[in-house]
Image (cartoon, rainbow, N blue to C red; front, side):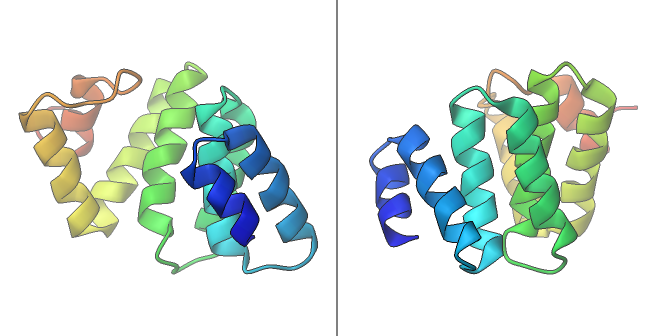
Length: 130
C-alpha cells in the first residue's frame, strides 16, 4: 500500500493502480485503497472502473472517504456522459458533508470548476438552480 501511495503521489497513476489492486488482494484497509484506486483510474481515463471503485467506497458506509467518493463518482459518471446520475451524486455530497459542499460552492463562485463538471450541474446540486 505504501509503495502504491508513493507512486500515486509522484504522479505514476498506472503503477499506483496496480499496487493498490495488489494491496486490496492482500487485505489492506479497503476504504483508502479503493478511493485512491478509483482516483488513479479516473486520472488515467478509466472512468467506468473508477466509478466502480468509488461505488465500493460509498457502500462501505461511514468512512472519511465517502463524501469525496460521491464527488469523484460524479466526475467519473460525467466522463461517461451520465449527467443525471452525476447530479444525484453531487446532491449526495451537498447534503451529506458541509465541508465538501462549501468547497464545491467556492469552486463555483471562483469559476474553478474542473472541465468535466459543468457549473450548471454544481449549482443544481447545491440548490442554486432547478
